[in-house]
Image (tube, rainbow, N blue to C red; front, side):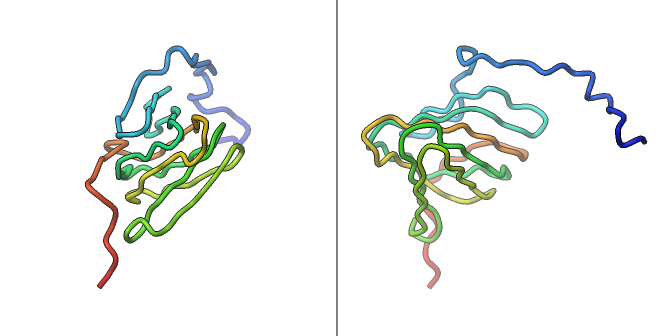
Length: 136
């Protein structure tokens, strides 16, 4: 196949997904997710977290996840006992590996919003009771 020749997928037109068409998705206590599209192994959407909110513990199964922080502050705890902490703000990216148990919070005084892209299969969100425990 000629590397410059488009494959059959190129016949599918580009399109816009309007903000007003996003649907509530994958509930986790403390955050509001909205899905733009979930097809072909990719999940795209947004997450909003109120100031001071701390989410429940969860993971994203077999999905690799990248978040782009649009506004506000974003804090993510993961690892044994939740001891690994990442903080981010507008313009930062945060990567969450498949299966990483974590919780998010908004340590700021304004709502935060992030754009989410997940690639993988299975359920995009699995709520759990707590973080991984520290090794003995």
